[in-house]
Image (tube, rainbow, N blue to C red; front, side, top):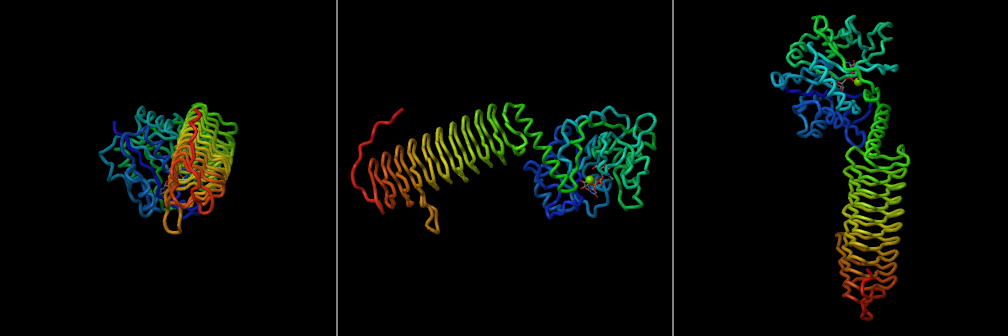
Length: 454
Ligand code: UD1
Ligand code: MG
């Protein structure tokens, strides 16, 4: 059986007061419409169709080949919106699932139940409803004596009696496709707003004696639609709770989940502890047994196992295992810290590899550098990598000792086992096992390297 979703996303979203199309506003780091597409995937078999209108260019560009799009211009209501997909889908699908792109909390499991309800239904429509005390402006569900649904009445036309009804139209439907294409042309134009309401299809079915069934949802939170930025913040909070709970159930400890912010795509291994006020953004992957935070932001980065990251800011970086970072350390794009690297307070690393066991305790900037294993970077060391026009590389060998406040003027190579004196300004390559001092530093004697402590 072929099942295709139509996602309605043509509305203007006026109340968002935004130049960004409503469905592209992010929730947990991903556009609302991404969440809607995720939910649809489980219960449908074909590529979904998104109805675009306001901001069509931006939305279509975002979607890429994750969906087909049809343009609704002008926007004459939800029924009219679905009609735009007829030419594309007629004869190509058995069931049609319709939902709104501004409901990012709707779960795939819920849509699956809806589709299952319709598979059992002899009539042409099944729909999602919820029973709630706060009507949120939703359409009211009017049932027949036999329990099937008679009509959906929009709030602004409802009688005082109908306004009392607690069963609400969530905005998720599953239709028999053949019936739908025909019925859409019979939906009357709404006399007040001039629109064609998809919800009126329910009355058409019911008047013809065809049963309309409901999947009644029990989680009201899932039904929140975003119309304003207040709703957006409610949805964000709910999504964050959901994401954090999933990680905790997978073995991640959170001392205070309310202060942990994790975006939708992030992966975290078990026995990692997320301390308060921590943020994991983008395509970040955290391994097992780490302690992250407090007060840490990690974006688009990879962290191995057994690391400690305290009060630090990490972006586009890779930490291998047992790295000890912070407080107040900063990693930028292309920073790669090997196993057992120690990076203390007020350091910055960019586009550089610090091999296993490198120690960089305090106040340093390392950019465009390769640093050999076991090397010690003294307090206040700077790679002077930028001459005002170009970035230049610095190569430091293994077991080097860079004295405090050394300026490494790139391009520069420092051989294994070498040493620089405190305050040295190094402008020329330093051979292996050589001590340099001064400003600019000059060679003063040859050194003897001690065997490595294991
Ligand atoms: C709709 C339902 C209402 C339900 C509520 C749940 C109708 C007539 N009413 O009302 O019963 O309780 O959702 O949130 O359907 N859209 C288009 N093209 C259009 C008009 C709308 O694509 O011409 C899209 C919008 O972008 C939005 C969705 O359809 O994603 C719903 O439209 P909206 O105007 O928000 O309908 P509601 O008044 O909320
Ligand atoms: Mg709405």
